[in-house]
Image (cartoon, rainbow, N blue to C red):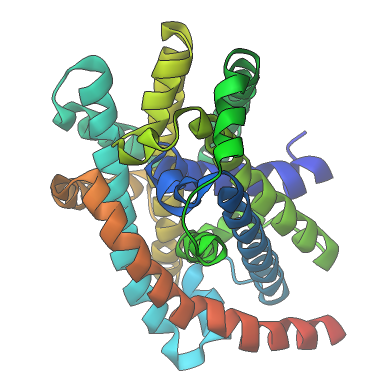
Amino acid sequence: MGDSRFFRVYVVPSSVFLSVVFGGSYGSGREVVEYVSRYGPSGGFLALAAIVMGYGILLSLSFELARIFRAYEYDAFFRVLLGRAAFLYEVVIIAAMILVLAVVAAAAGTIVEDHFGASSFWGSAAMLASVVMLTYYGRTIVERSMVVSVTALALFLAVLIGWSILEHAGEIQLTFDRGGGEDGAFWGGLTYAVANGGFIPLLLYCARDLRTQKECLAAGLVAGTVAAVPALVFHLVFMAGFPEIIQERLPAYWIVEALTNPGLLNFYVIILFVLVCQTGVGLLQGFLERVEAISNRLRQQPLNPVSHGVFSGGAVILSMIFAEVGLVALIAAGYSILSATFTAVFVLPLLTRGVYQVIRGSRN
C-alpha cells in the first residue's frame, strides 16, 4: 500500500501538510477565528476560498520545482529559486520555525492547563518528549504517524459536524440569517495561506515519491483542499456561538465543550494534543533534512538518531521559553510578520522565477 499511487500522491503529502497546519494553525481554533470566522458567516467562506487557492498554488508549484531539480530539502530548493540569496530563506525559516514551535508549545500547555487542571509546563514537556521520540526514528515513522493522526482527525470532524447539524442547526441558521462580520475576508484568508504556505519548502520531503508533473499538480491541489477542511468544519460549528466565540482563548475547545458531550471533548483533546506535537515533528523533520544534507557534504555520513533527537529537543526547549509570551499574543503578532517575510522570500520568487523554471524544466 505504501508504494501505491494513491498513497504516494494523495495520502502522504496531504497528511504531512495537514498535520503541520492543524496543530500549529487550526487546533486551538484561535487562528480560524482570527482569519476566517471573524469575517462573519459568508465572509468566512470567502476567506476559506482564498486559503484553498493559496495553498493549492504554492504546494503544486513547489512540488513540481522540487521534482524537476530533485531539491527536497529547503536549501537545495532555494538555490534553484534564489541562487546566491538562498540564505535569506534560511534566516527567515529558522526564526519562523521557532515562532510556530512556540505557538505549538503554548497550545500544548494551554490544553493541559484548561482540560486537566495541571501546570501548562507539563503539556509543553510532554510535547518535547513526543517530538524527540518521533524525530529520533526518522522520516518514514514521521510520515506514517501523521497518516494515523489525520485519519483520527477525519473521524472526529465527521462526528462534530454531524452532531452540530443534528443538534444545533437552528443556532447556526440564525447566525447566517443575521449576517454581520468584517470586510477584508479574501485578503485575510490569503494572508493566512501565505503565512502557513511559507513552511512548504520545509516539508518537501513528503514529495520525494511524486514522479510526474500531473502527480505534483494533483498532490498540491488535493493537499491544499484537504488542509482547509478542518477550518471549514470549525467555521460552520463556530457559527452556533457567534459572535461570542471571537473572544475565546481556545475557541475550538470552548465550542466542543458547549455543543457536545464529555466523551467527544476528551477525544478532541487527545487528537489535538497529538496533532500539536505532530506540527513540531513535521517542521523539525524538514529542518533535519537540511542538517542531514550538511552532514553528508562535510562528513560523508548521515546524522545518527541521537543527533536527530538532540537537535529537535534543543529547538523545542527554545520554543518553550518563547511560549511564555502567551498563545493569543504569539498568534496576533506572528502571522502578519510571517506573511510579509514569506511573501518576499518565497511567494513572489516562486510565482516569478519558479514558474519560469518549471516551464523551462517541462520543455527539457
